[in-house]
Image (cartoon, rainbow, N blue to C red):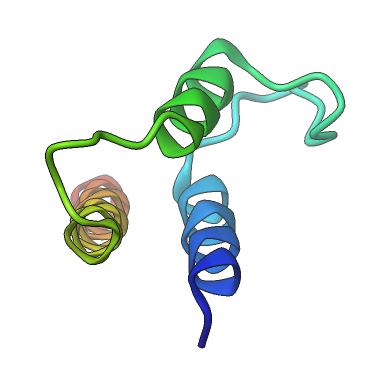
Amino acid sequence: MDVATRVRSIYRRILRELPLKPGTPTILSSPSPLQKHIRSSIVEASPEKSIGAQLDEMDQFVQYIKAQRMYTTLIER
């Protein structure tokens, strides 16, 4: 998998895990402030880290927010 495909995949996984507020449109043409921040942090790569390390960090972030969502779901039950 090339870098662009991996970045796109991770970005989509992040967006899927973000909580949606009732009545909030899911259209990406009007992203929320959090979506804008995530997108800008992905676009503005850090020169100190290799691209592989940054992708691994983003992947860990996806795993973290997924675990948080599952934790919240379990607490609500």
